[in-house]
Length: 244
Image (cartoon, rainbow, N blue to C red; front, side, top):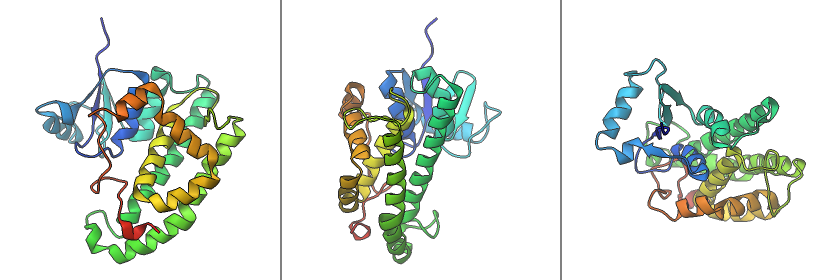
């Protein structure tokens, strides 16, 4: 019997954190349903699962993935589950844990990127905290982004990979490579001026971003209607006053 498609639950209209899971599924050529976007009652189904209906392990928030009877929330946990099933994680325990550790660090960076435009509270509009956001953005651009990029650059270098084929773990592409690609892509959207400067001195990170973007399945996905563009309702937002 053919395997049922994976079911991904995430808010429609923004790439958001759901995009990290989509990229892994797209790269692997796995069958999946983006439930809230593709099913007529998808939002209601997602809300019911969030409220604990039909699962003993409800998620705090989307994204979450359903694979048969298994329901997993949190991006890093979902990718830890999918990685070996999609051929996007090392087979050894140490390699799998190292990939997971890198993913968790990417998650930290994503959270900081979000908090730039919502430094006071997520329940407030950006317009209600613009002064605080300007202060947060300055530190993020000048201290935090460089620190994270330097870390990833050092991992790529220590892994012995080259600009022609940069990899964070081993010689094969992992979900961590895909996640770093998307994070850099989001930061380039939100802070084009700052990232234009910063990537010049991080050639391996810059090369990973470019080479992943050109992978056949990723390229096809990015050019398709399935790929939702960045916008000012998501994690990575471009406010010109925050990018210097």
